[in-house]
Length: 338
Image (cartoon, rainbow, N blue to C red; front, side):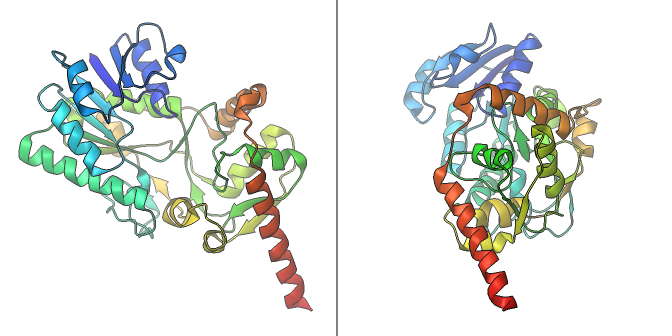
């Protein structure tokens, strides 16, 4: 197959690029070429900014694809642009949406593709919903060959997946664990969550690529493993060989005392207890199984992060904020008990 990846070098898409290349597919990446040195042999790069529609149209002149995969489309205007660029030159257009688009607050902890889409807490999710609605309209009215994919919390070897962290990623939380400092966990740590290794996600995604049963359909791709947030943090601490000093704080409080958009990322997503039913994906991609358990994947991630200083981005602002939140709550406890 001849496949065009828009982006193709991110947390999710790099694993897909590598898997498609290993399968012997003809893979093209349309991006600005900033990570081309990391690409597998044989992968071709079309260097352009997708937002420059005229330039992209010129560079794609005379080309056609079995599948075009959009990883960096976040608002309907970008999807409309893609329709203009790829209508008639691809047999399939795969759009990466988000499992955060599912109805919040959750009506049932079991989530499947039939779960309604609504998220009043997070604009990011509402934009994804709007993109999905536009694409399905184009499928129904214009025959645009759409497949929608909804990932949940997918991680790679470059960053430790967590619920509460600052703008520089998760390293500062890992450092707090190593230093024995208290680590903030949203809620009481008992809500269920799913972590999916990007190589497992790639298996499901590649199984949908060029799959005639996926046209006009939406699929979620996640692991079947469900963990509480306490288990997630305990697993990370165990892999580090340290004792977790957990400090539980309500998501609503965290959102009210910061500008980190915890209203969206927590209340609108990670604070909700969910279990994903991947039956539809397994029918379309027989044999799909997410093989990497979290304790296995997180060890691979930590080994890589600890071995590469450039992945250890400190965040003094977030560190001080954590200390301030914890100190204020401890003082409140003492004041109430006086």
